[in-house]
Image 1 (cartoon, rainbow, N blue to C red):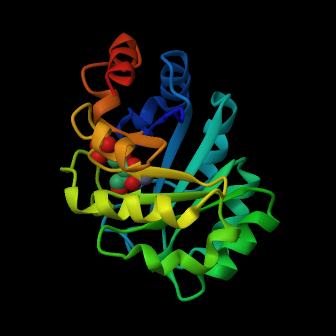
Image 2 (tube, protein in one colour; image 1 turned 120 degrees about the vertical axis):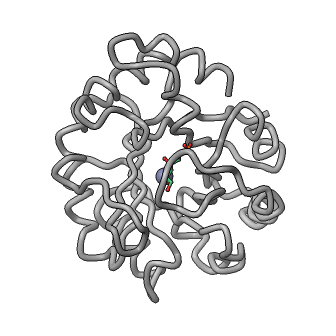
Image 3 (cartoon, rainbow, N blue to C red; image 1 turned 90 degrees about the vertical axis):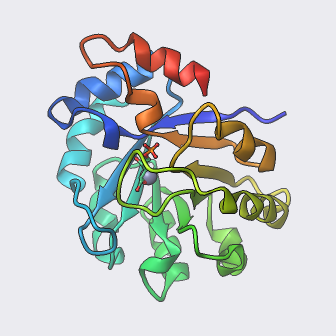
Length: 218
Ligand code: DX5
Ligand code: ZN
């Protein structure tokens, strides 16, 4: 039995209170904190960049897990490493040279992740498995929190779990993760669940006890 890690996505937090929100979800049991960076180009929404990630870093004691939904991604990797990211995940669809991107992330001293959109086959990362520490399986089309889980990705998780063999690679699922969908993806082989709306709903930074109940429910 593998332990399942819960990584709340601060995309669903109060952006005026990001530091306090990070501390609150950690105090309520989060294993990692997931940081969604969107560029309004690779995805149809904008969030924030490395300067904001650097400011929230001191408020995270666990793992700062940075999900880059940006293209091109290579020019900004160093900024996120310097901001203190532990994991940096780039999309396989974000450019023609994912192998180079993954090498660059590790060369900066970070753990390297690769993300696959819902329509992207598992085979696209078959030849970079020795360069990665994490696979992020998108279970919604990236860009927004609060979307519905796409069940067609479940067999892809099973394929990836077989493909990685005994390599120490996390399989993370991101998008529409709820108490109802979480068992489907963990049964398929995922060991790290990102959840935004399902963690932050019903709570606030002033009274985060709902965050803890929501985390435990997943
Ligand atoms: C979506 C982001 C997710 C998002 C998930 O583009 O990558 O991390 O915050 O939000 P929920 O859990 O609400 O689907
Ligand atoms: Zn994400």
